[in-house]
Image 1 (cartoon, rainbow, N blue to C red):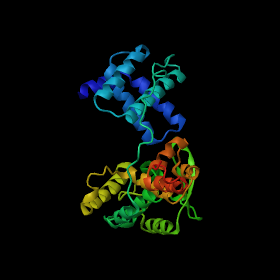
Image 2 (cartoon, rainbow, N blue to C red; image 1 turned 180 degrees about the vertical axis):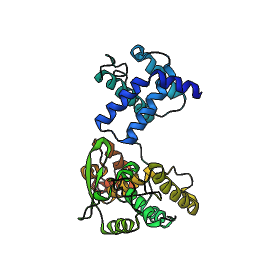
Image 3 (cartoon, rainbow, N blue to C red; image 1 turned 120 degrees about the vertical axis):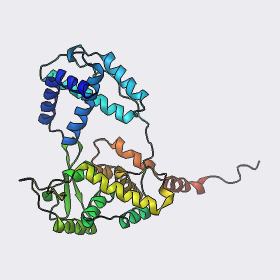
Image 4 (spheres, one colour; image 1 turned 30 degrees about the vertical axis):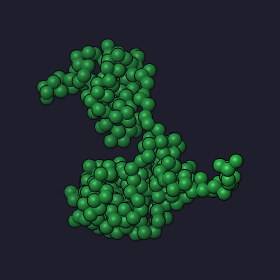
Length: 311
């Protein structure tokens, strides 16, 4: 298997290098760069030894069908297709090929308005009580940024010391390399200041990552996920009713959005706080609470004529 992978990498080495250069010039984040490279490399293994110029729309559709048969969900398959579209687009722009065989393949239709998984406010409080570890304040800061500021794992990872401003806000580099500003509550500011006070010095030259590992390097995405996932595991052990709830580090962001909607935050403001490019992405949170639906219907209950069943 390893020999075959080496053969594939050798066969498409030029194309993969061009793609890597193209993504770097586009300013894609390291996580996106790695995800796209992995997607494309796996696809190329399925069409090897076909030359890239000979790859057809049918090859890609066959690959997407194979992913579906293996149980890959719509969202993941759409990301794989986006990776392939970008790959061929890069080769065209780098004058390595002319047509994009992935351009006209339709994305899978995803389920709309699916209710996201989230934690209730009292469950979030219990989660914070479950935080442990040698670097306690650092871990608290990580969990708070996801659950009470709505940050993605990658955004916590990329956060630098200078992104935490004197006015108490944080400047976050999100998806699409777009910046957003989030004013933090005083309690969260205090925790971040505490984390800074205990922060190890960075050994990454001019870079000053906010969260630093014990070795002086930027805390990895995997470690940030582990901090959250270990805390969630402890929460589930202490609350058996949550055992079957599919919770993860990203669900903390859902919990933040849920709290905002319930507190009366309008959808446009929430879109800004979450850093969503499209308001349609944010709108899934308007379907989270049937208490609000019930309240809306109760508003018109007194307007329904009585005794309609009597004739």
